[in-house]
Length: 171
Image (tube, rainbow, N blue to C red; front, side, top):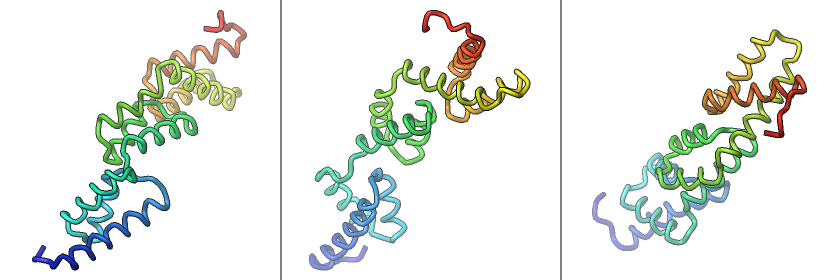
């Protein structure tokens, strides 16, 4: 970047800030996505860093809060497992500390309950199919949502036992 007068520098900072604020008006975004936006707009990297630092200090950019909202939303609305949520957050450029903090909201019991609910729903929609096909399709769906094979199989077996009327002790 060639030498700028203080007024020119301030104008670049204001333009970059406006770009970021317009983007944040639509929805929250992680710092990495905002940095990428500024790079696409050919904002000088030093100006971009300055603007992002200021907005982060002001609390307008908060990767930890963003990660927490995404984790809650993906889990509650889509039944995504912690592993799938972590992968999505990494793709969005979030750091491991923000990801770990966000995933602390979802414990193994929550994940098991969500897997069971998803398994029940999938098995109910495939009642007329061969039992092996039902299991395979349900396991595939749970796998796509990020559940481990162990969690998926336990959920499927429990849901099938419930269908047969074999539920044991509310376990």
